Structures are given as C-alpha cells and as structure tokens.
Figure 1 (cartoon, rainbow, N blue to C red):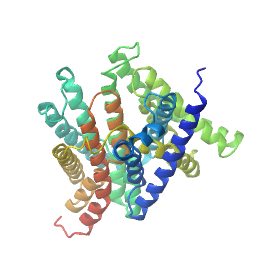
Figure 2: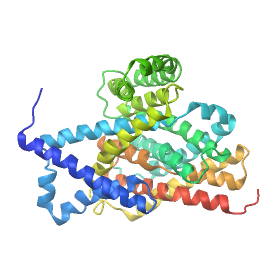
Figure 3: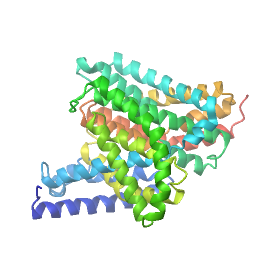
Figure 4: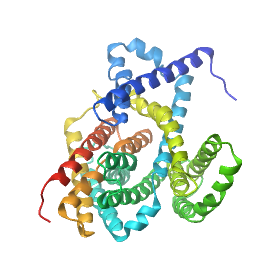
Length: 413
C-alpha cells in the first residue's frame, strides 16, 4: 500500500478542515437569505479557489492546494466518494409507490418533461458546436446527447425541499411533480451513463453488452433486488446495532452497486443511484434511517464536493455571458414548456400546469454533478461547465418563487 509523506498528510487535513469550515459558514449565510446550502458551499469554493484566492494570493493558494501532490490525489478520491454518496441519497428520495399512484398523469408529464427539453438541448448544441466551444467534430453527437440530457434532468432533492417549503408536497400537484421528477431522474441518469460509456471507456466489455448489463442491473434491482432487500432489512434491523448497522450496510450496498456499474463501463454514480432507489423504497428502511444517512452525507461529504467545484476552475476567466444566457433560455423553455404541457395533457389546469413546469425546472446539485463528470471526461470545456453551474443555481433559486407566483395568480382554466 502506498504512503504519503508527513507534509502531505498535514496538507490533506488542512484542506479538509478549511473546506468544511468555509462550506459550513457560507451554507449558513445562504440559509439566512432562504437559499439552498449548496449555493453557499459553491461560493466558499470560489473564494478558496483560483477565482479569488488564486488571483489575490496565489502563493497561499498553492500552499493550501499544491498542484500534483499526493494530498491532492487523496482529496480527489474523497470527492469522488462524495459524488457516489450524493447520488445514493438522491436515489433514497425516489418513492416508486408515488409514481404508481400518479399513473398516467405522471407518465405523460415526465415524458413530455424529458423529451422536449432533451430535444431542444440536443438540437442547438448539435448545429452550433462552435458557439458551445466544442471543437471535436468526431464526437459532436455525443456532446449534443450530453447537453440534451443536461437540459432534461431535474434535481429531485431540491424539488422535494421546495414543495415542502410551499406546503405542497402532499398536494395533487406536488405529488405529480415529485413522481414526474423521479421518472425523469431514473431515465436521465441511465442515458447519461450510456453516454459516458461511449467515450473514454476502460472496461473490456463491448458498448452493447455494457448497455444490456446496465438496463438489466436497473431492472433487477428495482424488482427482484428490491424484494430481497425488503426481506433482508428486518433481519438487519433486529440483529445489528442501531444506527451503526443500518448505516454501514446501506453504504456497503451503495459502494458495491457503484463498483459494479463502474466495472462494466458505466459511471459509478448510476449504480449508487439505483441501489438508493431499491433500498429507499423498502418499507423496512425507516424515515429515521434515511434521515441519519442524509445527515451524515449532507453535512460532511456534500460540502467537500460542492466546495471542490470552486477549486477546479476560474469562474471569472471562464464566464461567458452569451453562452450562459443561451443555456438559461434553453433550460427554462424546455423544462417549463415540456412539463407544463405534459401536466395539462394529464388533466391539470393551466395554472397548475405552469406551476408543475416551474417546479420541474429546479436542477440543483444533480446538474452540477452531471457537469463535473462531463468536464472530467473531456466532454465539455470549462466555459460550458461554469454556465451549467450558474444555470443549476439560478433554476434552483427561482423554482420555488415562480411556483408560488403561478399558483397565486388567477388564470383561466
């Protein structure tokens, strides 16, 4: 087993300490202004990263985050684990019972909310690759597929929180939005995982077999696997210490699923997400257990990940105003039109349909994770990444107020 030096151990511990301190401080500031904690955590990263600290005090920045050091490699590994955990708890939010209860309305809303933003997000980048800064002509189709997926996916945890804040979570429109977002997320992450399998693959498995294994894994875990977990959890709850046993077991399953999908050439996040869906849907995985897992990940690993976003790129040097505006327009138009039209076809009033479109438009952490993985795989450049991060933050900040505005208006039905 490799070993890092005494100095690098000190650097790593300082990095973790500073990132957690800064992330928590600015998360609390964001909450004072009734904004998601993720906004404050990204701001903390921007201040600590090349955008601010790297420009004002470059020597301090290099001392704290030295380039090419072993501590940086270890930190990158910790951040990778954090991404896997974040997708795991996103999967825990998925309740398949709600999807079945909403039936046709959820299917129509989710499909329209997936296909229309995907189509708009695909067409513009495909025909305007120069504008989007993608020079590799040979992979233009893959780039356009990614942008379509990025425009189609939602952030289920953010949506749930917004609906709870508006006292709409158990309402008819709230359940529709949640169910539709669940379906969108499952399909969207599957598409994105396949896209990643088309580029830079390291597995010794053909792409066709990889896709078949991925779909087979998802179907198995959501049917037979879910049944096995539902039988195993009562035994674990009785025989294992609480809450350590459940926490250890759930994360062990998370990492196992992530390892499997990574091995077959699909990103680890998909395996973690599907395991989360299968585990969280069990009646024996209590709300208290979910809360413990959420608290553990959201307060330790999530801040490390979101602070690290600001450490990766210079947000000022890579900010492109026109690109950001275009991506914002595509994101808002595609999701609001698609989800709103789907809700209307499902029998909701125009007022409720527009509110559903605004609700589904929240991208939050999921969009940022999506963009970061694409950046790491060379699928997008830093300017597109910065624009996607800004889009994720803007849609998350505006989703709740726009839903509230839409439902408070007197529209003709």
